[in-house]
Image (cartoon, rainbow, N blue to C red):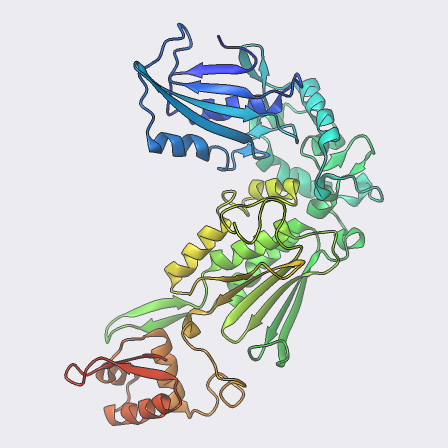
Length: 464
């Protein structure tokens, strides 16, 4: 029968019902420290099998509830199914959360006997206090030198709270600000001070408490840090202000969007990098870095590539042999906060999504350094130079050094328009065919491009 630990349903599509049940079992209000079970395919009224047939799609959908970001913090579940003569049964085993309260779409669901309900103020406080003994991550620890006055309360109330809490619940919430912060793990009621996560997200002077909380951007005129610095910028403040500023900077400064001719009558807009991929890797750096280390996140732009290095390296269950298929969270509260703010769309899918966007834009896959102790590095190559490996020292000190203006135009055109024949290049660049031929011979001699195809069909050119 249904009880504090059992819920049965014949529905296979009511995602809200499943999410509320998983949330309630996760919260484990009675603190029995035992898992709860959601049974799909069993009639609640008579306990009989409904004739359910469990499909791969249903298994994926139910398993996906764990990481779709609607339940925060992320629940711990296992999914099983069993087949019987009269139908299948799908079972979701839900383990008690270490970091309560757990919310589904901004509401705290609890189990009261055989039914579920939304937690009242006292029940929410019990869940908050229950969490204290389970604190394991740095971001949830109290920041003893900080006070409520060190937090930008307006930023929390106007920007974060409406996204984290259901609108109807928030309207009827009379609690003081400390209790509201504590329910979201930004304040420690026992020590009467903000948590590290609270200072990192909403601090007025975050760098005072955590000197390494900034992103250092440097643009180099070349391929290494030894080359001349063209531009520098430091992004500092709390994480909400840093993410906002980075978003604008990437779109307006890093992204180079330009029209490129693809035929005599048509142009196509080309981007050197997909915005979303850069954003995803930067957000991951902010979310996963170690804030106990005073080094900043390094965001370096070289000729033809971007590099992001964050201190801390892989964490927990994430190891070089299972990366990127397995992830773990050094900063659980910050991970949840990034999801609430919309900086992370879905847990455990960030790298896969970023790689897919790079491929869609025509960039090669991002490369990672996950073996160097204490850091995590990702490098992306620019679309226009993805197949160009410069010789040592570059071309007389620069990407197109040693080439005259016409040769540079032809080379740059082929970089983003591989596979074109001489006659097409001549038309699109408005240069005589003989001139194009001369420039191409120079580029081939310098091993910058390569001719493909037969003489009969005219041949075409690609980056060597």
